[in-house]
Image (cartoon, rainbow, N blue to C red; front, side, top):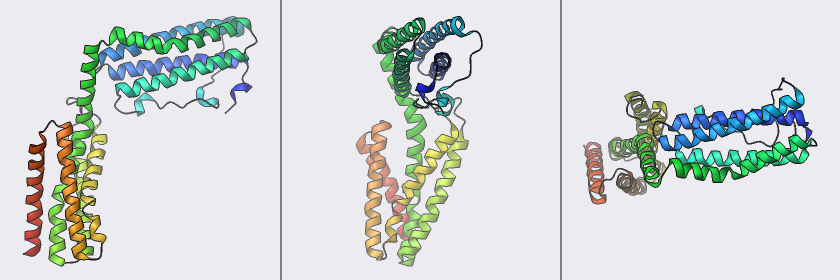
Length: 318
């Protein structure tokens, strides 16, 4: 990598051309990724991509006038100081706030680049072009506000916010909640059955650990293979499977860890307290994200947990 102050005017213009092309393609990717769920916001990024294309054409005209047709390949990653932007296709499901936030970072970075480039240029016409582009980038925040006002009126913005919330519930909350409930409830029976059957904390811990890890793997694969998300809109299957498997493991491991306490009575009391906290958290999530009335959520989760808990105790004492 080279420092920015080591670049000459030809290299600075080549870098600027590459930056504008990359930014335009990123905005176009944002638009394409958001179009299905957030068409109004996608229109904003489409127009921003068009503006970046206009900047690139102006830079190309200046470069040809000064240095000819050949443009050396100089990229952001070749120069120290630039932010490395993660490709959109690796970023997973796009959200409105995440894309707008990245756009703000990109515009601020580009503005600073043009200001520094104009300050270093000795050619009057190049200096003027770079200074003009710096001013345009400085105004882009207001341009974005204008585009949003034109394309995303309040009613549409509210609809997009609600759509984003629904997608978050579908892609994150639902698989995570399913895993958390399975891990917290289904592992109660084997853990407490082993505890009361043996009267030894370590045996209960081993059984709980095995049940938790097994349930996490099973739930993760079951969720990932349930559907590919193309029709349901639930997102990438392996992301959902990973979330579900992780939450299943977490749900089971918390009431298993107390059995690391050597004293059996203390370990059992601690595990029961953890189970109550887990069920309370599940009830809160169901109320907060699944629109379940709080009393109904607490009764449903508590009743199911109590049945499984009682099953474990009965089997362990048989």
